[in-house]
Length: 190
Image (cartoon, rainbow, N blue to C red; front, side, top):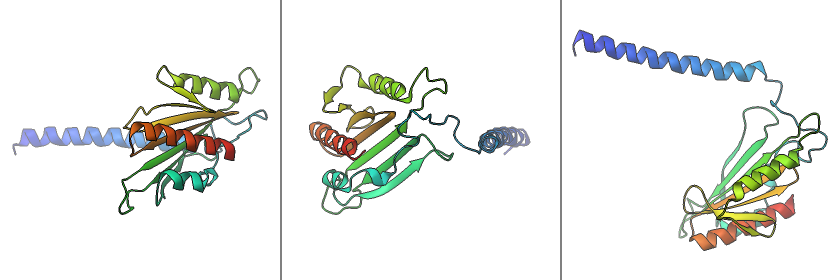
């Protein structure tokens, strides 16, 4: 490798490394700057000050759609009292059955401090935005083809909380039915 090529390569490596260091520093600095809590906090009118735990999803609902279900992921935001939580169950390791995946995501919406917009209003706006033309109302949820993959998604609202249930690994109509069933059971458990 010629000396000029080596210098060019080193400059690019240094530039990329510098961008990575500055970006990491900005993210860590931002988290440390306001490590006291969330950027937005629940008001007294908000029923859910934070999203429920994955344990709040009925085990019977999970087992009914994902045989030999394993909780693969339970994630929340990086700050305490994060407004979002996602739970992922799969049967990828189950022998003799097709792999199935169930994702339940909770998002708590908070009202303004002055009361002009409530958390329930924000949750209703998210549900309306996710409804779209291809969605169909089923009991308390809106069911639609998933935006990613071959599954189906059911979206529901409970006060200031939106719950999104994504189910895949089966034919589309079965996925729609199962997502709606799990969403109804989650709604009943809340």
